[in-house]
Amino acid sequence: MKLYIGNLPWSIDDKKLKKLFESYGQVEEAVLIKDKFSGRSKGFGFVTLSNDADAQKAIEEMNQKEVEGRKLTVSEAKPMVPRDNNFNDRSGRSNGAPRANPSAINGSRRKKDAEESDEDAEESDEDFDESEED
Image (cartoon, rainbow, N blue to C red; front, side, top):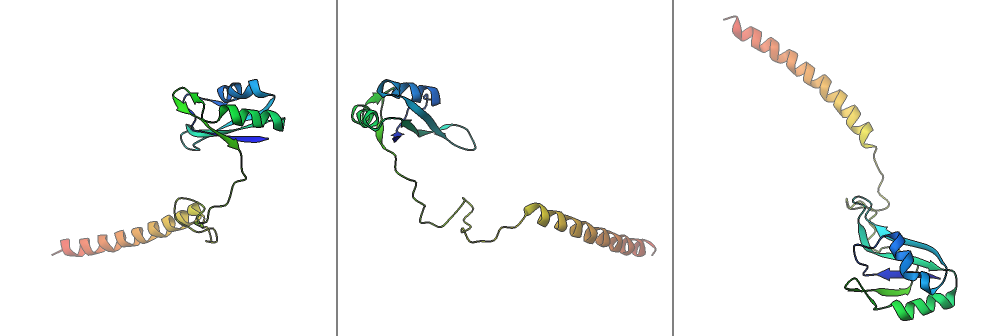
């Protein structure tokens, strides 16, 4: 059975999480959830115990148990429910929005801008040369 472990102290890593639950039975997996950018703990994780009876005992004994000054939340893990805000990232684009390739856009724009900039510079030089001849 897979368990959700919440309100974990920031000092807990995967190994310490596994060690917390080894006394209840065979831990198949212990995963601490981390921020994908910073790598820091998000304060929760999941532990999978091979035996359901052991998992139930762990829930009963570890839920609200204080570890390093924090009361853990231990329960049976539930399947992840899709969010209803219809956003797939923080930019605010919806799931159905077409995605552009930024390098293709920026690459073609840069070339076009460079050509226009060269033309503007040539016109500017011509204007400047004519005004100097007075």
